[in-house]
Length: 231
Image (cartoon, rainbow, N blue to C red; front, side, top):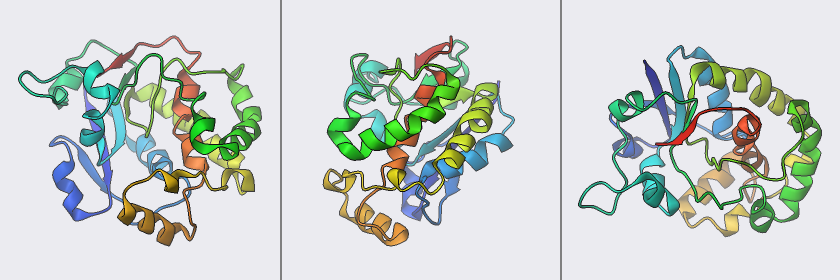
């Protein structure tokens, strides 16, 4: 089995946060799609058995909240078991491995209006005709996946890009409902990151679009019979 594990960074000093087996991808800018635009380009080029495209923050995210508890602790520490290439490739065969799992009770669709208000409600309602191509739009997701922090089997990830992510981006187009402020700037504590995004996008806030797209893979796999694990 083979693995292509990419991590996206935009500053040289972020390299020290990457996993040793990761393939760095240096991003020089931002689009309203955020990492999804990079994923749409990188994943189809990979022929590895398993593929992942994560942010440079993955290590920190794995040691935060529910992830630490659900993934298990490294012996003698309060941190999660170290993610290694060997652990990934020696895991029992899987279709999807979630790298920053949440409590099974977590509701990624139900909580979104609490975080983003009417921006989420209006964008998700406008997006439902696209989602209905894949069957009944669920009220909630079986699996909580955020920030595209997952590993997927090559065939599944390729299918997602070609039949779901790229068509979703085309469906979204320039419809202003997907570009409305998400209220994320009020919750984000990293002032440097806020200024970077504001400068590159020319907006005051994150648009709602990337928060919709980060739930898209969970929506894509929701009705499929797949082997999904926490890793």
